[in-house]
Length: 289
Image (cartoon, rainbow, N blue to C red; front, side, top):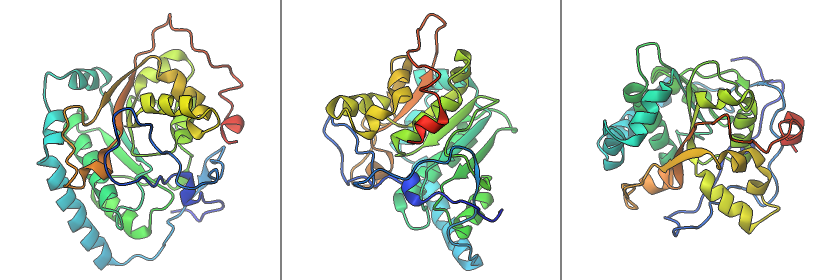
């Protein structure tokens, strides 16, 4: 890893969510602190692990725990439903044919059981739903330690040495799994792929529900969701489905904390849809405010 010249703080990415299931229609809480988080990097900045110490015994223990989480998710009702061959979701994934999976904002999966379940789901999605042996996967969060990076690599993920603040323009169809991220991170990803219009067809986002961000924006015109203009605009034409559409998230097995309020989003942009976003709204400097 390169030495960090400027490293994003955990507040850039990590979201702390209350325990338990929300009532139907409730908007998600998307801020981990009462104050606004620091601005995202406008251009990629060098990054290195938050804890550079590398203990092989810790790596081995973490790999055992991660593999146990993979087995749990694989055996769950939630994951079995994802594998249904004739579901609308599988048809859309087949149409997109993602060549890459990016797990962004997973948090510390050494200290968080929920983060390990999220990592487990990403590993299974890469294995079972990305076509071909050439499919690749990467993983990033500014809070990752050297131990977590080593474990991620052992599980088949690459870990970038730059923090791009989610401003990642894709060349190939890509599934972005962004569990419980700040609204600004989804906005940054959309901004990087907003023009030309067909570019968004290469992007799938598995993350916080855009519909619920719209509800939150209605409730608070000055909140983070209301400032995520691209998320709100994309919600007009995104196909969205909750990951627990069939009620497969069990409150008692820890899955609710890992997967609540999480939805698939596909952007089938029609050339006749008028996107109400100006070039000024796509400015990375403006998005960083």
